[in-house]
Amino acid sequence: MALGFSAGITPGPLLALVLSGTLRGGLATGLRVAAVPLLTDLPVVLLSVTALSALPDRAVAAGGVAGGLFLLWLALSTLREARTAEMPRTGTAEAHAQGRRTLRQAALVNLLSPHPWLFWLTTGAPLLVDAWRDGPGGAGGFVLGFYALLVGSKALFAVVVARTRHRMTARAYRLLLAGAAVLLLGASAMLLTEFGRELAA
Image 1 (cartoon, rainbow, N blue to C red):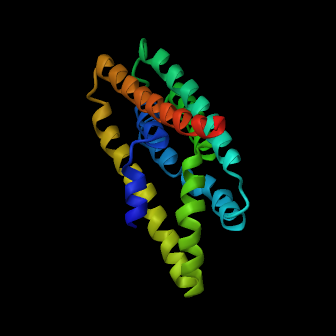
Image 2 (tube, rainbow, N blue to C red; image 1 turned 60 degrees about the vertical axis):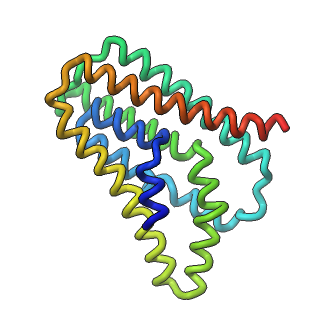
């Protein structure tokens, strides 16, 4: 639960997409984006458990660089949109389209980002295997506690943003979108710096 909570509240690409998705498409979009790990992490967990010791360092670094470049593209797109964005009304075709697009982006970000892979390869998979040795109940409790707090903390952010979005001016909305873009830029810079160095080594 502690691992899930810390991962859920740590600023990163998925949290930035939860915030920007809630601003663009409303609470339903933000909650769906918050739940993306429930949809995308299964292959990450399975592959991490089975390939824990077989993955070369350069493959992890290449994935980090690819994820960083994708986040850079997302950040620049969001910054460009923030210059002239108007608050979309929930329930409109535009809001639904934005919500679907943000959900696809979040799924791709979560699959490309090396952080879920690194967490499961270095921490999650060993803990899960160790818990499984004590019985399936322990392993199930670990997974349930982790994802309840990971998704729940991000969903809480979405609720807070959704409750205040209707009182926002266009300027405040643009500033918040720009803030989400800055979070994405920061995450991109960290990935490109950290894993680009490893790839070049």
